[in-house]
Length: 211
Image (cartoon, rainbow, N blue to C red; front, side):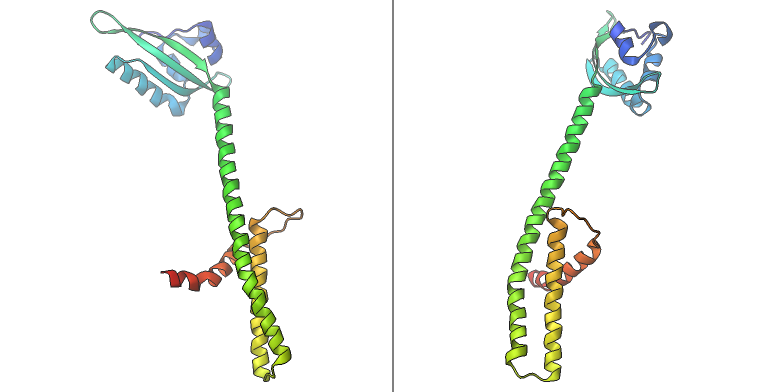
């Protein structure tokens, strides 16, 4: 490509002075973001070799260091012997559109994450409910046994241990709900690894039975 010229809008988008640009293909490539330069050159060279029009998005770096994203769509014109004569097309600054797309993408990802957490929260509440109902029943039976049944000292110690374990499981389900449920006004740090380890211990038998 012998030269590269543009309209006033082209120079405005690139932040260039027409007299300082140089008007060469190399000068144009130098304005392209280093990470996009190879792709831009390869796309144009491929279009020249295949005698096809091309379009692409890529970034440019202005003389002041600011980065913009542009869209260019070009058609190649040839001489009679098939040699490229000129490339003519349009170039648009799409920076704001790209930024809006990135913000939308980030928002969608955050929304998906929020929905997943919401689903986990509902599941944890359901699990806690399924655990707590029989758990409270077991605890009540144990407490009643201490009152109504004549127990040896060893038996009473075992019952106290069982009651202590039911209390520990109840606290674990509370932690589970607290972690995945709506955020409280007063936040506090929790050891997620410790909670997960306790959950795994609780459901390990059920998981093994399902294998």
